[in-house]
Length: 198
Length: 198
Image: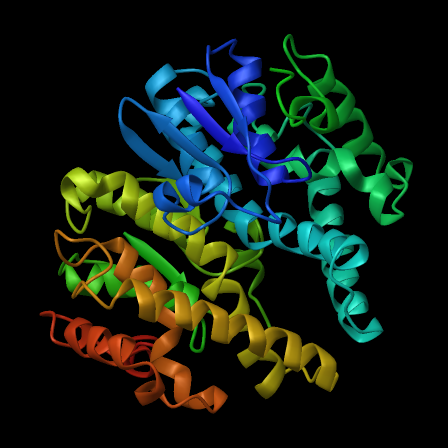
C-alpha cells in the first residue's frame, strides 16, 4: 500500500492517520505540491493529494479512501452506526472540510479580500459550533466510539491555532481532540506528514 | 419510504431524482425552509433537508443517502466502478455541491459582497471546467453508464441559467445533461420538488 500525500494537507492526513491508527504497513510518499512530479500527476485522477495505491488500484478523495479502508479492514467503521459514519464524512466534505482548509489556505498561502476571509470565518465558526454541540453528549461523534467520522472531521482541527482560533472556546471539541490524541498510534499532522528520512 | 425535501434544494433533488429514476414508491414531503416544522426538526440530525425515513431509520446528507439507496437497491451503483462513484460524491460535496449552491443562494436569497461573489464564481468555473474535461471522453462520469455520480454532480446544474451561466459554454456538460434528461423517469427539479397536490 502506497500513500501519496503532503505536508499541510489535512485531507492527506486523514488517510495517513487511519493507516497509523490501524498500524497498517504502508509506504508514505511526500508530494511537493508546488511542483507536482509528472509520475504523480499521471496516476492522480483529480491532480490532488491524497492518492492511495492498493493492489494495483488507484484510490482518491480522502473520505472515499477512508470508506474503502474502513470497509476492507473492518476497523473504525462505527459498526452498526456505519451509515452515521458516512453521513459525517458527507458533512465534513461540504462544511468543516471546506471552510477551515480554505480559510487557512487563504491566510497563509493565497491572500483573499477581507470580505472573503469574513465569509469563510463565519462558516468556520458555524461548523465548529455544530461539532461542539454534537459532542456535548458524546465522547466521539458516534456513540459506539472512535470511527472514520472522527478521523475525517478532526483532521484540520489540529491546526486551529494556525487560524487564530483558541480551541478552549469550544470545550467539547477540545476534550474530543484530546481523546483522539490518546488513541494508540496517533500522530500530530506536523509529525505524520513530513517526508520520510530516506 | 418518506422523503423530506424542498423546492430549490438541489441536495434534496438528488434523492428525489434517484427515487423517480428507479420508480421507487415513496411519499415526498415538502418542507418550508423559511419556517421548518418542529416535527421535521425533531427528526433531522443537522436541521437540513433532505431527510429520508426508511423502515423506521432516519437518513440524512444527500450523498450518504444516495450511497445507502444505491447499495440497498443495487441500482445506479456503477457496478465494478462503485469506488469511483463514491469518489465523485466526495468531490461533489467539496466542490460543485458547495460552489454552485452557495453562489446561487447568495445571488437570489442572501446577498454577499462582490468579492465573495467573485470568489465563489471562480470556484464554480473551476468545477465546471473539471466536469467538462472529465466528460470529454465519456457519456457519463463512470464508463459503465449512469450512476449516483451523475445524479449527484448534475443536480444543481439544471439551474445553471439561474446563475447567468450558458451551458453551451461547456459543451460536454450540455451533452451529458441532455443524456441524463433522457433517462426513463427523469424529472426537472422545478417539477420534481414542488409540493404534492394533496
